[in-house]
Length: 539
Image (tube, rainbow, N blue to C red; front, top):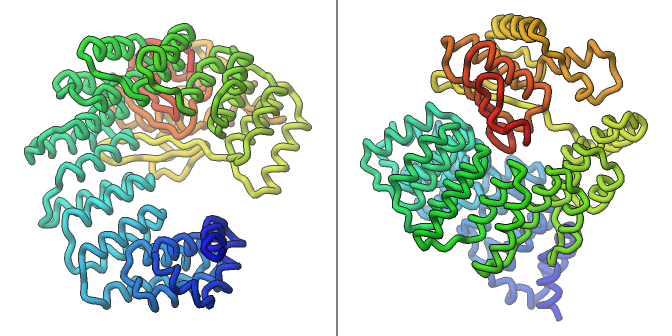
């Protein structure tokens, strides 16, 4: 009875942690809790519910049971104390780890668990306290920062590693390349690839895949193709990296050609392969091809579609305006649709102004993010339903939810410059705004009209135009033009989807300045050249 009660308790949150305190004194719990995994689950319940009292009692029991050096428990305790605003206790706990006979293996494991819990700051404190570090220590720090989306910090640790007496290995380079890929930082990417070659690191499928992914995400799809062509093709991950890279660049027929080559070379595709090929079809509106490959999964390759595949199909139909078909896929799914699938439907409902179906999507989303509320609000605004839109915004205020701000960045000379909408914090703000104002005047003379209907607020046309003029990607582009020579290719990365106004404006700028401008948004790449875009205005 107690055994079942404890198991059930550890899987809950606040009620679990509160009830756990009384169980600590139960005589038979001491015997049961000799399994440190049970203690860990109970501690995690305390962390999730910020229950300091229960966590403190568990802390005492951990040391009585001799679990004081168990890395997973130490990391979870640190994270729990931080969650409970007990910073001093968290620091003391880490100090205790170092007061024992130093063991690099144990501290490495503590760092690994801290990174897994998102406590990269305390992992860093651990790292700096270490009298000795091995290659695993450095790899855990670099990889941990990458997994926690702290890409520039990961690169800083890599530089620090190069200055130490520890040589990077294959795992180091795999993490660093992933960081470069997420940043879209081509100068960093070229430097890392060159270092890997100089250090004679032999390519394996993991590194080849990482290289292809890095160059794809840094806008160099041709270089990615060259890496792919020279790589060992025996592992499916290499093919998957190439197909996904081509999909992101809006090259569906190239992706299909790679898939066909797989079949010729008798490489069996896996579920990730089909996510890539279906995404390629979705980004280019190839509805029939998407249907064909979705059916091919189970009919020829006996791969059962997973929730991700259904999600891409909903996205494929939604982008093409086939909202009823998208909804039919959701209804017919053999698994429960997740929030990502409902979000794809909601996004399509906003584009095609289907508020009723959009409300169905919202009603089925158990965990709403700020972007979901914004999509619904924007849908109402686009239909001039200001009261409904205001109701959504009021709900956001009540729940303390803030809209995610658009951010763009550009890498120049190995330095990453970041901008947000209306930003005036950059040291060269005056110069970049002069360039931007000149560009705006010049594009207007060429007949460009700002799409003020996209500013979904009940404000004046002049205010709407001012809002559009200072979007983050326009600021990043203006800075790129300010700091580079005429004719040089410019690449910008953005955290959100590019808006139609910026998209059309950059098309015209590429024609007027005779420049190639690449924008990597949250979904895909846009290559602007000669007044047109590689996405063919479908994204």
